[in-house]
Length: 288
Image (tube, rainbow, N blue to C red; front, side, top):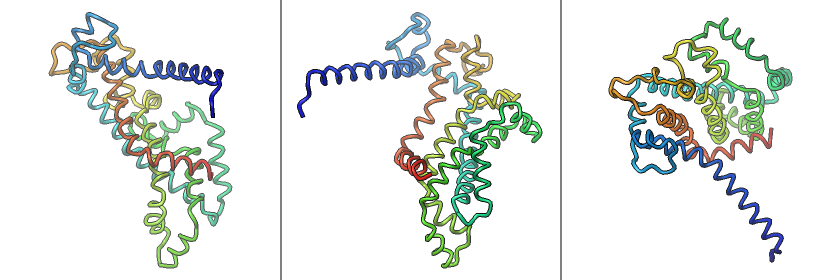
């Protein structure tokens, strides 16, 4: 089908607009990456750098030689791994049970979960709950309140609704109990959904920031996002004193290197889950 002159002008205009949007989106990421690898002496001479003449790993070497930064990375990794595992167990178990029509009181439980989606209690009730559970200044204060979400449960329930109940009936005839059916049949069929929602949970735990500010009073338990925020607003690097380096790199290059380190882990995880991500999310959303 031959395009008219108006169609060609319209397509060229769309390509131009999308190219500008792509440049505006990509340039900040590129600038952060470039500054983090710029030689400190070159950065001090020229504050704005598009392409450095001398590349250096000084900022990363300094960051990974500090106890505070390594400790914060370890805290965030603990939250992402342990929190994601706990969230998947709780969310998938509850969603699967709610997808079985033989459960008594199923509609009442679904209605209560729907209420949690529509109405949020707010910051103060959540803080009082965490305080009464004696979880203040504990890493579990960042995991237990965020174990599951009503929205994720409803989406996962939609996925489990697509699994035929005849599979369970045949397994029970063969002598499997409910736990064996869950482990041997349901979980292997649920890998796409678990991978998709596991990525959601992992990103949420890795990016824990506001709850950490509320519940953690000990700076040694800060996740990387809180430490990064203190680096970005602070005028000095007292939290990142190193015993290896006498003279630290410029604060700006350290901030950029910290941003890269905080971003890269999630970017590395996503390609391995990409093939499950679209399938799992779509099945849950379409059949929920």
